[in-house]
Length: 504
Image (cartoon, rainbow, N blue to C red):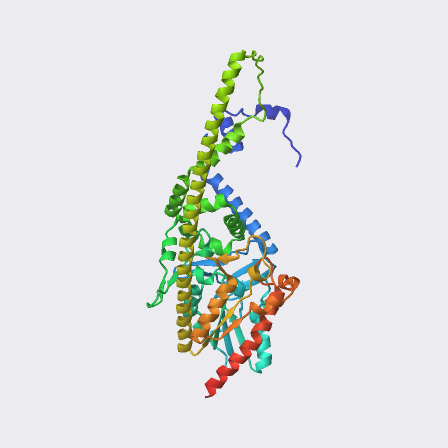
């Protein structure tokens, strides 16, 4: 409708007052009409909403890309840590595989608790080498064994993998008691990996994978399993923080990326590792730093470094006037003085050399004494860990018998022996992995535990074939195939003899 107001009518309209103009200006500028600004909480609320929307978008993008899904450990008061449940895991550190941990933390999502009639069940126990997250589930030696044994034995065979990264033998024994026997296995196949016996007595650090209970068996005494190391760690600031964000750790892919970066820094950045150690074990770390600070060489090296940084790279040369020629008498006195000084210098050099040799002899004697003491201490500790491993295996063997199962042990292949790369530990307390395997064989022979060495056959392989079995440390698909080829005839024989014993 056309505007019929003429100019005169517009002029005759009442002029707004100053108060009205201020209210109008306040409304347009975002004020509340009383001269004040909008409530602060409304602005903060909008900001938080947009932040939340942004985080959800990032989470969605990461979910589509399969990123941030390497977090898989839940804190456990007895075991230190276990697999999370109902959790997607995408492994990228070595190889590539996408997995799903079911309601019980297993990759095999279709396994019921009740064993189907006529089915032979094998439970696998071990650390990350058995866990096999680096390859798809169907490529793991457990699933390959399931197919091979079903075909060879002409009966259904199920293989359930309870392997968990970082687990020691004591954790495997405890997990067997808590979870494995609920699935009524006919056999428990324990995989032994490098340093497992030493991890039964290891101090927790900043990595959740290294939080473990203790096990110890002194000569002539019963096996003792103690989780005080876990309960003590749970009281640390780091443990309390991780516990408080357990839901975020389980569901957030953003946290998964942060955790992966933090784990990498913890292993490779000594400064970060020290900082995290202060949060995990503040008392012990402070004491260690205090001891290191008492070493004068530490401060001397730091001071020399500062001096080197502050020292200019050039020097100013000052030229003095040439000296006057000495008189004839002065030259004669100087010659006599020089001869006397030279004789004294020779005596002084001989004394210094004798003192130096004496000090070196004392240092060599101390070094030899320390080496002998360390060797003796390492030997005592090694025998103690071997005795503890023996006690754990006997305890596991008895538990299996009580639940109608048989315990078998396999020594897993190790890249540190077959195809070592820079940075790999060749020995632990002066013992190579081959030495550990020999001790394991002796224990199994002594306790009449079925045992298979899956390391030795690969020692005859070519260098190229040995390297093809591993990523940087864990098994490739070829490595799992190799392990299947070693285990299949061993298990066929064991299952056959077990069936014969049952019929008797």
